Length: 155
Picture 1: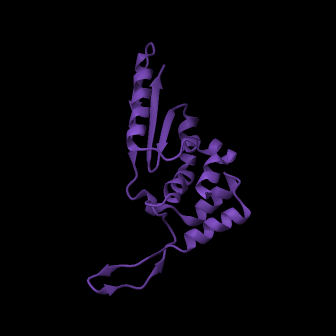
Picture 2 (picture 1 turned 60 degrees about the vertical axis):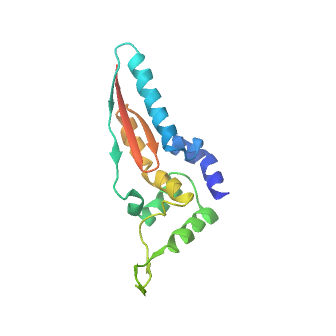
Picture 3 (picture 1 turned 30 degrees about the horizontal axis):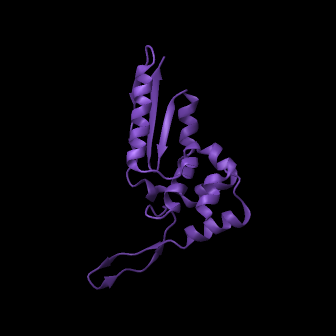
């Protein structure tokens, strides 16, 4: 339910336009990028440069304090909702298990779970300022979970 509320929140859609379509499959993203390239090449005199950024262990790098700041300032998410996110992120722990031994649990100060519904959404919200940088150079782009595909169409 919270995921649905966040993805339809007007400030969130403005801040990260790819969210209004929700989390999509890899095939859908590939088709979207492929179609963009074909349409760009079909236009008179256009060429396309595609840059793929694959951020290694991207979900593990999300700083919780910075994410909370972005949720509040960029998305306008405050009060109970932002407190719920803080509670969710503060409850994340990790430990090492080998054979029958387990290490002490440690709180995670960075990272979001990639295998949860909220993990990819929180990652997109965290990295949304990348879209500002790309757009400031008049480039088209597609953001997909932890992959960013900026594209340049020469006119």
